[in-house]
Image (tube, rainbow, N blue to C red):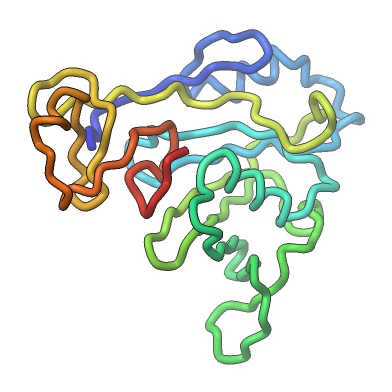
Length: 216
């Protein structure tokens, strides 16, 4: 996959296109986030933990939401393929989707059934892992506080535009990715390759693209 790709994001409210660096400032202005005594949600940046974060989101996460709600949201928008287990690592503590106390585990382990306001604070960085076999890891950061939007549930404020990958054979826009090699192919070259060992999957706007059986 082309690590040189840079993606911008689209604001769900005004549809303006912004860079990942300008996103927080845009949200503050676009959503009129200037009444401090009415804050009831965290503004959380979620991104692919690579030097070039092609995939990224800015989310509104209400204080009342539980970690299991955030886990489910991330699964639905980016991750879910085979009902794999998942976990958050927050301050060296493990919040598991399948909580089972284990005194031998090097992290303290807890259930995800805990309100976000009990564990999250502005400035906190933490991680989410989905599937402990073919793991997709996400880096999350609480970049501020805000007022909830829409129905006061977890919601996307800005999401990256779909990255455009080039076919490894001809250079045209790719449509498929090999889950074994990571190479991308356009529709025409896929037919020419016709190789079952490539295990081709559709390219989708997710850090899970090309992994396991994920199709979006």
